[in-house]
Image (cartoon, rainbow, N blue to C red; front, top):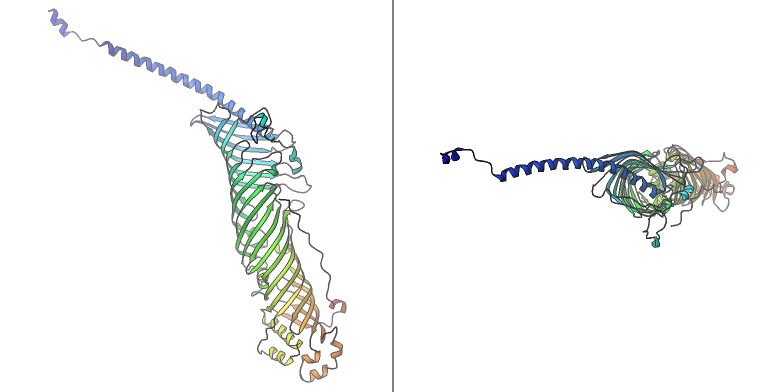
Length: 570
């Protein structure tokens, strides 16, 4: 009986299973406490980390720029690591009385890992900034800006470190900036600050005393176009910004010259630069396949190579030189592009030499008439002055200089026929001149001319013009409008032949009595003449009605235009 009852009673659980369940229960309780502790620790850590990081950022900026720092908004998130965002950042230098902050930022954000958060310095991989405004004080006041002391090896400082007990507490690997503006202030009366708008800017290797690599995309306001540049900048010297090193390459593409009144075309440029902010040496080239002036609207290819020195603290540019090719003509220019008095726009002053050139290229560019009035080889030396102003370039452009045209021929048959007849009669060949006048074989005499000129108000004024064809030498002065609607030249013609030798038949016999009256100053004949009318309908004639004082060519030179400024020393 006893053996049967033991066989039919339930079996008791093994002791090992009871122990396993108790371990699982206690482990679960332990995990709950660990999780609770972790959340509590994270909450404490977050509340401690936010003010610590905020303080480090403020201290770093205050140390770096010796400035008072305001930070409006500072938010921290731990959803994906440690993320920070903020805005309303303003930096005011301690030694300057500025109404606007030296630096201001609309918004910023960055991400950093937990591991290095409490390390010093805090290391941040990427910072994004939007709405950065940099307001530099006038040049004379920049000496009072925060000073970066030279390295002191005895104090254990590296180059670029601050001479202060406070130290840099945050280091940044990369900055991404969009919608930035740099304003260079001025204390000159009536002169407005110089502004640079930067669409986007990427800077890497950002750290104390280190140069920054950058990639910038700018929208140039005038002429409108895109500038893409990469290079290095810094280390930035706040005590003397103009001495900050800079180097790089650039591309200026699809610049619409139509945004400048009076000219047209699409310009592209590439080049490289190096130096310091106040002495940037630039070497580059431009291509404008369709350059034009609105007085003619005849597109022409224009290519330039240039060597320039740019003062990045005020935008003044010194060209040394510009080597240009317009059509088939070579142009060499030296001068400067500097901010005008009052600060509205720039004064452009150049010294221009034109050689191995064609007069037809110049006329095609500036005059509406097609084909150009004249062909021939051109040499020219001129001062060039283009003041600022919201008017067409051709209305404000001022040129002044001396020119010479060799082997000139007029494309207008009426004008060239008159020249041919003048040449033949001046050589005492009246029969051939009569044949020319009645449609005979064209003599097509080549002309040479030289003189002093002044261009202004879309009119070309020529003084001391000496015009020479075989058999004749003409001295004239006058005005020619760039639209081809006005010729008004007056002067004297000196011919090799006597007046009686210029005609045939009874006229020749009759005029022999007058030969002594017209033979003057070693010439067979000297008579007053005029060229008036328009480019399409010129009138050549004698000018006996003008007074002797009016007939006498003017030999005085016009007042010089403003000379180019002296460039800074390299």
